Amino acid sequence: MAATTHTVTNQVPPLVGHDVFAADRVLSEAVERHIEPGVLPVALVELGELGRAAGSAQAQEWGAQANAHPPVLRTHDRYGHRVDEVEFHPSWHRLLGHAVSAGLTDAWGRPAGHVRRAAGFLVWSQAEAGHGCPLSMTHAAVPALRTDPALAAVWEPLLTSHTYVEGLRNPREKAGVLFGMGMTEKQGGTDVRSNTTRAEPLAGEGEYLLTGHKWFCSAPMSDGFLVLAQAPGGLSCFLVPRVLPDGARNVFAIQRLKDKLGNRSNASAEVEFDGTWARRVGEEGRGVRTIIEMVAATRLDCVVGSAALMRQAVAQAVHHSAYRSAFGGPLIDKPLMRNVLADLALESEAATVLAMRLAAAYDADTEEERAFLRLALPAAKFWVTKRCTAVVGEALECLGGNGYVEESGMPRLLREAPLNSIWEGSGNVQALDMLRALQREPGALDAFLREVGQARGADHRLDAAIKGLLTELADLDGVEARARRLVERFALVLQGALLVRWAPPEVADGFCASRLGGDGGAVFGTLPHSLDLASVVARARPVAP
Image (cartoon, rainbow, N blue to C red; front, side, top):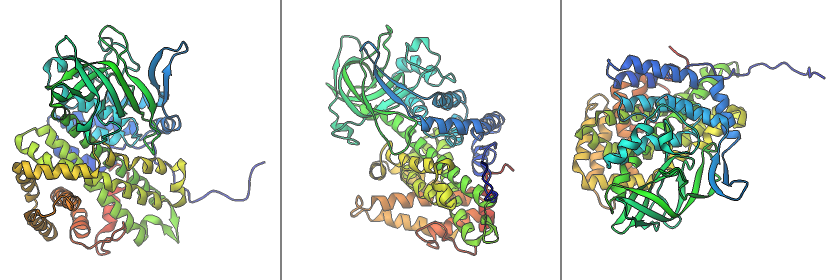
């Protein structure tokens, strides 16, 4: 019997069937700013194709299905043999395959490769963030492997391949592979120098057998892993393949998959090594030094991934408010809702602009840019990833009760939001890393100040914030206890400087007033009412120009 009690009205159409890249003016402008003219046309075509795919109903359905059907661990076959395989829903493989074919593991050898990849990662992660882990690890393994030219010659072409090959088999038989990472252990966590996994040398050059465990092993279905273990010469980095050169399975006992808050479509595992064959990467005793470039690259992906979550959350909030009416008109026209949306849009734009600036620094690969990254990367990782949860939570509230319902997609974004702040070093690790750089690498501070100095004189609030930062640095008494305060200031000054240089005046004005000038509250929606908030919101609306 059909219900006739009411007619459904005032409901918002789904945000689907649009170009995620073209509709993001901030990201599009960043790509045009950071990619040289000779490469830009090709990059725009690539990103346009990816943006349309990310905004399609099909990609959205893939994301929903991959989260509704999380990975399953299969430790043994029917006969009792250990297989240690992780099974994923077909939609997860489709998402990952599309990402690999779009070049999201290929940055190190292409012109403007890091900006192109970061933009693509930001776009495609909005369809579903869970499959980003193997993409990030595979991409980030390249600089670590390059410390051993022989290993890089074998593995780098497979890591950067645009072909996704599902399943475990001899890498020589595959057109592309994925990599994961294993660093942390039960007793140490982030304190990797307390690792107890042992590496016993074999007769072959650089060959070892590992015995021990990893408490968090990322992307356990991958073809290979970079792990840390204690060799006779100290903590060292090793490559652990899942399948050995003769085709036999390596010892890689997956004990269980983590039952995580979010990131449900991705597998994170506990693994045991018991006579596991490994090949050393880099010198004995220099494991952290060898793997640190991989960690740095994944930290950048944490920034980009958080910017993606912010962008998707803000896009949904603005889209909803443009179509939903209340109290006599569209929500987007109500002064208080407009203030909330504009405040969220400022945070999202600042995150995107900063993420793309860091990617451009990787592409430049000069001594100056490497010094700049030494402070800018941990500051961005600390700040952007922490702001993500607040942004997504407020954006969810813009949808009201509808946003709290799974069908809206907002709860999945909210569960995902805290992840990037934890992965690859939590907030305290980033703050302490930045302190070490300040103390040991004076050139890093010089490079940072030259970067923000390019915006000096354009906004008095930014100038005052830079002066305040220098005052903070002049007094290092009790610096560790106030390291979070310091790294926050670094991040805000850098974001303000970038927006003053590149964003429209209304965006830069709003950011500097609220984030640097003190004219804003502790929650979103407390911007000065005199700002051009309507223009800020219109810029964030997911409508292609």
